Image (cartoon, rainbow, N blue to C red; front, side, top):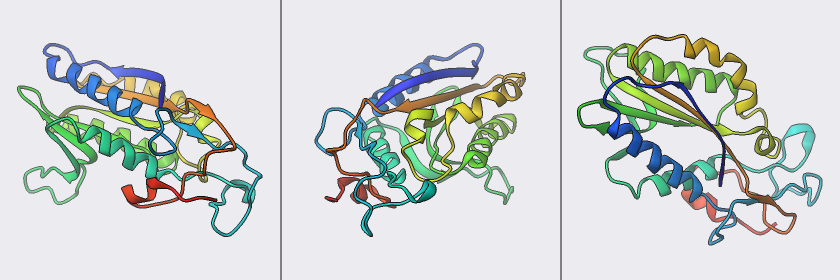
Length: 216
């Protein structure tokens, strides 16, 4: 998978050694996301009007589209190779019962605190909530920063309905850039390496097994 945009909305002042290591790990994990399985690149089926049948995911205007959760699952598998990552975990903020600091992944950085990561599989409203969740966690002193990963516009057009995407979100970047809190806040746009009508569509799925695909 290709990284098409890597934007620092805020950059933590002072010690950042652990954050730089996290960034390297996230970059490597993204590049390790491939399709079809056992491939060395992320190639997606862009023939949205072909093979309309009951076994094929349908989405925007009833045309064929690719699933999103299996892509996230593959990224999680790649990131788990690096030590210290915890997935879909909740951090407890004293007696606070509202689970604000719930991230898709998090890592404890020595001397800095927790760093959160979100991989977007929801709509654009979910993308706003993900960034706000990271910021609020930092303002509470629970985290030192976080990363939101979401598709670029080209990839978005081949995925299921109304998935959050970088181009829709970027007009609001000045809102998060205006924060003066000492935190690391990063937004990453990811895209495909190539398109082909010969590869299977990415199925909708809840777990890593779904990413193994099925023939259409």
